[in-house]
Length: 628
View 1 (cartoon, one colour):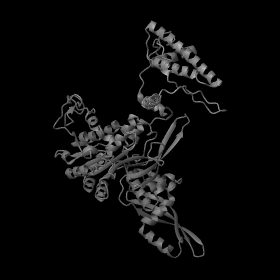
View 2: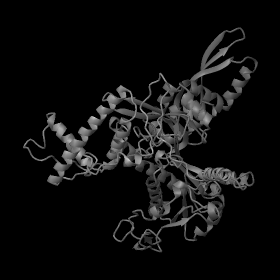
View 3: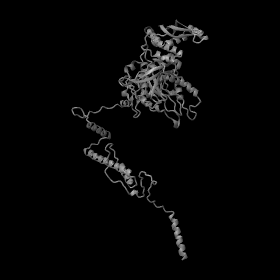
View 4: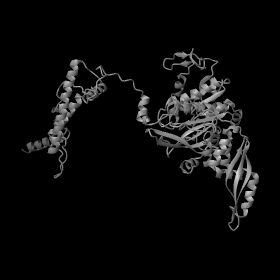
């Protein structure tokens, strides 16, 4: 007995210890229940035997009636989910909504099945877009529209759509008045009559608009009057005043002025008189544009910056190269071709005048710069278009090579950095192949046959489709001293810029030094430091880099002014300078209105003229002041 009990106890303990190593049984089905008194949507019942229930039923695949895609598997998943939800506790309102939705889906599926069978029988397998367009046509005809022409023919095929016109419609260009192409064509024309032919018109304008300013000019630029003015006002300020003056005659050396003088005594008694003096221009003026420039310099010397804009826009006197054409609407991307061509011509005129100016080339050692940044070619905006930039470069190269008969080399910087951190700025990545593959009209029989020096090669196939001409005038290269050949006469560098971790200063400076004073044109350069780790573009050598960046002289500048950001909307004005037809830094304010026909229009009104590039404070003052 004792032995049997011990044996039984031993066997029981072994069985209990063995069960500890066996896998635990599957938990029973459970259900999540909400707290009492609270109504929640139905929850999904989870069970260990779900794998054997609600299996998808085999059936024919049914493509969707609109998108022509096979979504049978998705429908089976939805049916499986609904079956699980039906077994769960759900409020009555939720159940009614579910049943209604299931009925609608069942009806739509039945209609799709019938439509698919019908199309399969007819062999009418169309794309989803064509099917939708056909349904729209049917709806139009059902509403009373006519199909085709009056004779009952088929519907006319719609003409192919231009994606550019579609974008312009999205931007609201249909509501805007188009730019005057004739004005764009002749805007840069230099048409300045001699002083003898326009002197009376200039005098009449000054006498009606700038009498008070003429009095201040007389006091500052007539030496004898300035001394008398200082003596009379030394004891009592305002004892000798010249409130206004008027022009009697004007010639190429200066103008005769009639002054209205008010003398005030110690006890307040005043006496009014007139006098006549002569004021000479800073330098002789042979035409109307030169007279306007002299008047602007004199007004600026008196601190009358706001009055300079009045002289600049003098009606009917001098050229209009200083102005910006109306209705450009530069926030439309892409711009119309006539607007882009106006920018190209304007920049080309500035480059041609600069290259012919030997004094400028000697002063700058050939270092000149173009800053032309409407939204399309602004490297700081996501609206930058490589094609527009390269069109500008091509026009500049053709003007230099064909018109001025000089050999030009166009350079784009290569990868910067070292090792794993080698890279190229995003806007310049892939630009070189596009530049070489452009239509230069240099093939046999074309307008500029033999213009390119290098062979034009298809980079995908390696095929040479345009043989180079060693005697050509346009060649390509990278930024660096090795690209400077002895036969090159002008260099063009497209948007040189540093990047995080690498500076463009070293290759660009070495190339400028290798050019040895030959004209070196940078287009939209970005030479500011981008401080990076590893002592890259840090304090060391910064003064040298800043001095190098400032050594380039502006010959053309156009940029839009925005309200507190660099985004392309809203445009508040523009800053323009062109040494060819507008040798002033002019601040313009954009004015928009709607005409009687409901068309939107815009005009750039000059507000101030500066000798050098104005600061941000000066620009803000010019745009914000309400006084003309």
